Amino acid sequence: MHEFSVPTGLPDFIQQHVRDYLETNGEVGHLWDSTPHGGSGPVETLLLVALGRKTGRPRTLPIGYTKTDAGYVIVGSKGGSPEHPAWYLNLVANPEVSVQVGSDRFDARARILEGDARDAAWASLIETAPQFKRYQDGIERQVPVVLLERV
Image (cartoon, rainbow, N blue to C red; front, side, top):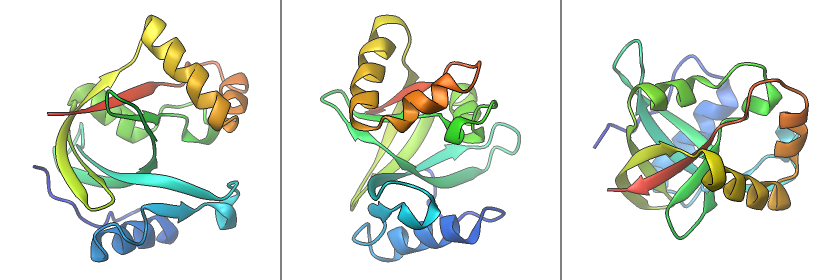
C-alpha cells in the first residue's frame, strides 16, 4: 500500500481537506462542502494515492467519486482545463494505487474506461453531475473516466 500523506505545493484548502480526512479517519473530509470553492454543495470524496510519473513518490489527492458495482469512478475534468490533471497522467504511467473511502483503505488498479464502458459511465455521471458535460463542451480533449477496482 502506498503511503497516505498531506500533499505539499497545492492550495491550502486542498492540504486542509486531506489533513482533515486523514486525522479523522474519513469522518471529516469524506463529505466535502464544495460551495466555498464554486461548487454546488457537498461532494463525496476519496483519497487517491498514485505514484508520480516523474518522481516515483506517492502523491495523495482528494477526488470526488461515484460508487458503482465495479468500483469507484473518478473523472479527470480538471475543472474544464484543456490539459489532463497530473493525477490522471500518473495513473496512465502506473495504474497501481491506494485509495481511502471514508475509513476504508485498500489497494486498487485504475482502469481508463473507453468505448461503450466509458459512454455508459459518462451518461450516468452527467445525469448526477451536469458540470462534467459543461466542462467537456468547453474543451477539445476527451475528459477521462477512470474506474478504481479493488485488488
